Image (cartoon, rainbow, N blue to C red; front, side, top):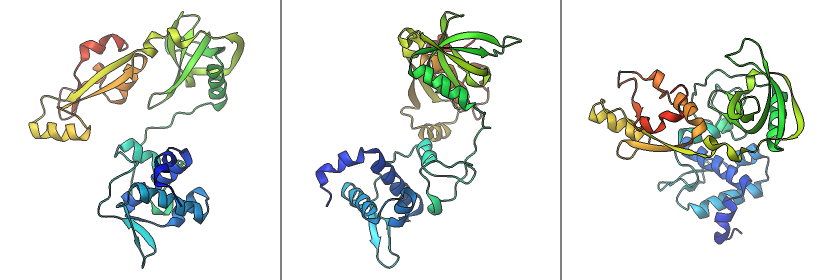
Length: 292
């Protein structure tokens, strides 16, 4: 028997939470779910799956109702999400769309709704390089690499103190202190040639990386030249308040974020129907944009 007082703590456990997310997603997108879906996906017993359903029903009594004739649970009339927030990225991460070659751990499997996602071309990562750089960052060690910069004709030897691996939305890079530049810089993993040499030397601490530890508020707003009804649509699409939303981004990652959102200055489009959102506080963030 599940104690109602313990439901919140149970939801915080990773394995239970993942199963309940699948349960809720399936019911939300398909309209029904059988206990077997949880059993099969996670390889758990019927008793454990039944306990998961009980936990969920205690937390959200009106979300599920049992259909005796069909022998499954279907969405209740008073459905209110317990774990989902409605963000697109959240939904893409928890169900496998047909075009994904390697589905995530959580998959709706046979209960999958019709959905299609367009992804950018995959960029290859050398897992040996990834592993060695990650180990050096974790253990605060320096690493010597042969790096092919786009400003140099040939690869150059660099001694780096990596502290964070970053995925910018399109590719991986590492944030590191460069002995050569005597500064913290970004290095694209795919441009590291050969096998990095992890040195038996303590790396430069990330504590002095001011741009990494500085949060920059980026004010994103609806393009002011759009018609009022179009402005409302865009504002709702991005969850804006008063036609604006504020995103706090590390100073070192501002340019990557703007590129991802097609908002960097070099790509601004004069047509508001194309450039539907704009950066409102351009002057305040100008110092953090490359080439500015």
